[in-house]
Amino acid sequence: MDIETLTLLGDSVRSWCEDNASLLGKMEHKQPSNELLNQLYGTFNSLGILSILGEQETHHEIEALAEVATQLAYHSPSIAVMVVQQNMAAWLFTEAGKSAPEGWISLPVYDAASEWRFQINHRYNQGQLSLDGRWSSLPLLNVATHALLPIAAKEGRDFQLILLPLTQNERGLSVSAPAVTLGLRACPTADLQFAQYDVKQEHILLSGEKARACTELLWSHAETCMMAIRAGIAKASYRTARDYAAQRYQGGKIIIEHSLIRKMLADFYRETCAMDESWRMMAQGLQSDQPLRHGQVGVALKSGDLLPWLTSDGIQILGGVGYMEDYIQERRFRDAKQCEFLLGHPHARTLNLWHHESE
Image (cartoon, one colour):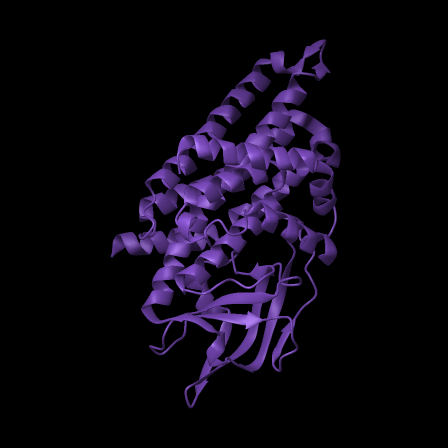
């Protein structure tokens, strides 16, 4: 996608967020209702930003989705995560040659690929796949019409992507109440409980090596988008800190004139620009049919590690009011910690990178 189109897309999303600031604030300050979440789905679906990767002509436009994500994250990281995971699901359906069902789709964005096999137990009885256990922290599970889960089957069995309908009561399948979280409040999570749940053949979306390859590509695409979300949070935090420092008086002068504040803001701005440039360069160079290389994943993990420090600096510049909801800086700090763990625990993923590099 050319720069002019990307800029126009970003401006359109930014304008929508500014025009609907009250709606975004309402979703972020308390557990949003199912009606509000479904209303948001209808609005975004009509805008076409929930199926960017689901359309044939834009199927590999990761840069376009990342641009949407970073603009949304400036105003609401929660909603940015929701849009990214919905597009990831739409991408998988297109790869499978099927149309995505209407409504939110729950996809595990809080787990790394290496952690999937530990989520639930798999059993085969005369070729029938049966599931037991609990899959924790699935996003939007309480309003999703379907859950899309990767099953890393053991004992040499095929890797599978299964699509579970959640709109009907099925034996052995239950959804917990939404969890109350400190970060990403507009994107509620819940647990999916299995009790000898038999997976039907029609529930298998993809299987075998194609399913494994598609899932690896999916996480590469998601990694780039999560970097864009972190950049959006960092830019919003910097803007709030800079504007406050330019207005607040202390010791007889505006605090931005204090050398320490100027130094903090300069470092903040430099790191924010570097974070924004990193995801853009990665998105431009990303091959649509190849997963990220280990070095690129390392850069993505670094952005997740850096963001909480940047938002912490933003709170320090605001002082005591940084912990109050009036300036939204406290929410960005909570969201930053949550975004650090998207796509899996950073320490476990760093160890996994080390393991592959040492082979």
